[in-house]
Length: 399
Image (tube, rainbow, N blue to C red; front, side, top):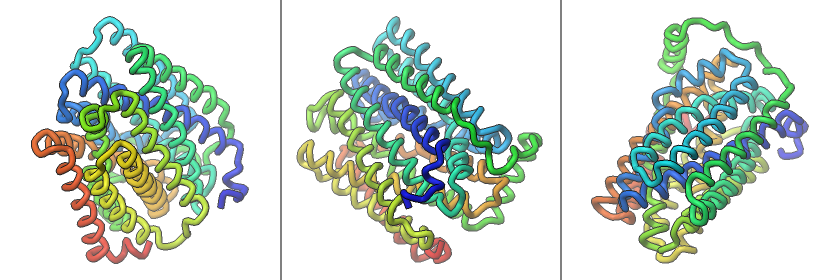
């Protein structure tokens, strides 16, 4: 699949390179937010609140971002978001230099940063589909996933080292530079969309059309619900990482960066697997297996007795998480008409916007019952979800 000419498209390569730079910034932001929230409070509950605020805009603006992705030339939208993100990072670097270690500023930064980023998700994945087509979408998104995870690994490791040695303001400036580079890469995109932008009908009417599609498209509705539940019980494990790094393993900011780097390694492994061996059929069955593997990985992390074993389990967890993302992104776009693909990705953004519930749940469980117990509860919950959906929704298994 990697040798497919569609995946050697020059604009697809530019999109992937720009996404890698974008994810340097995103991963670095999460390291900054996690470290500063934990250092200010010594509580995973507050880390959960900060990360919940970071992901909350996806829930609030997810459907709107999908509508905009169908309205606008997606290349233009990507360029504007990269510039806005870079500007936001520079502004908060200045604020954090003047007002260091203020929890309210960390929480504000988390929400604003997440809000700015939200509008690029649907456009980026929809544009990837425009370039490679439905036949190659799983392989295409697998390759896209590889380069974004490489960017996340670089961003996490760099942010961990920068935070430890130079503090938050300098770290944010470096992350802003990555977004400037991403802007120049996406500014060179030349290929037009495969379809013309949709007519800019009123937002309320667009929302009604989107909701009508969700209500009548049982596959789409099932994918939205399952994606949201997996987001709550699975992806929220990142809330536990600052406490694991600082308290259990005494690895500090650099150790947290290495943990986020391990997440990227897992994503790269999943991307390679999906780009080379993923079948065009039985995506649903593979998705359900991935959910159960995700849960098993959380159980392994809860029992990790040393830093290296924790890193190994994070690689496994991240591989399952990345595979779940690619499979849901591809299946959602394939089950709707072309004119609604941007909005399908808006539904995906909305579904992963359930993340705040998960980060709050994980943070509070970790504070009340301990990190290991919290991870175990969520691991068993994911396994139960995978088994339940396999038994009750046979249509998903056949996708």
